[in-house]
Amino acid sequence: MKQCGLFSFIIFVLIFLAKPIFSQQLDSILYSRYLPDSTVRTKNYLKAYELYINHFKKYPNCSGGFTYFNAACVASKVNHLDSAQFFLLHAIASGSDDKKSYLEDSDLESLRQSKYNIEILNAYSDAQKNQMPINLMYMDSMLKVMAYFDQEVRVGLSTNRIKDSTAFLSFILNSKLIDSTNGVLLKIFLNRIDKDYYIDLSNDFCFNLFLILQHSNDQSLQCEMLSFVEKLVVLEKLPNSSYALLFDRIESRKNNKQLYGTQIKYNFNTNKNELIPIYNIEGINFRRKIFMM
Image 1 (cartoon, rainbow, N blue to C red):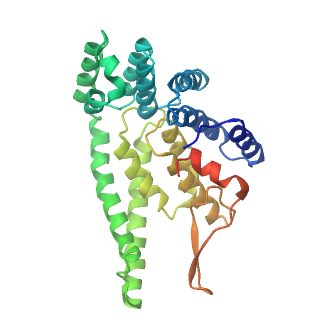
Image 2: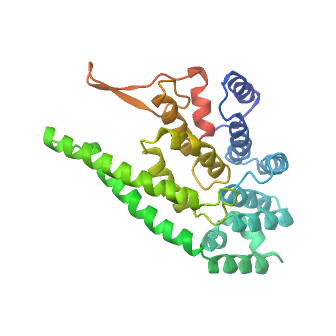
């Protein structure tokens, strides 16, 4: 991926100003995170380090373990070991407790050889001892089961297991039953989650929750939870694309144009899938880039 220059910045500003009242702040945060990542790909580590510093200053508390870990790698590469330690401890506190990555990543060799190594290893050990609260562990187990059946019933359609009208009717009934049951349980779970405190939520927990939410037939619930999904994306508990998928699904169900080009519909006249119309199609490639699609 090429480094973002003036042209990319101008495109971003035009997209930002042209958008209706969507989540413009989210776009700015993700663009700010995208800049150092794209600069790393050109191996300009000093510039990437500066961009990470600028990002954390401009958007404090708007990053998760992935960005902090990458920032630690860059800081270690340019021998800013105090910053590397700071970023890595934040990555661990944000739920990125993969000690193996720390021990094996070549970019962190200088940090591992530094005086900070013992403190970092202790932080990893402490993080791995911590467990989700018992109520979240229970919900996590239930979400895995719910997500399994949610995906299983849809695999039947995507893998052409439906051979006749009887099989199709069975699929419709099963999918509606699954969606209805999952919707009831999802509302119960969401009412029990402290949405102002996300650190206890694992990435797997959040992803299973998202899978069920995006297939829900309750449009009001999807609209209500869009801001929740946005916060999970900001904290990197969910992939950037999760927000785009849910946003487009909500808009397409309202018969509005989509923004990120994720939704299709079946045209019974042509017997083909068609892309739902896109708002501001000129900026679609750049929007999809910063949302990692």
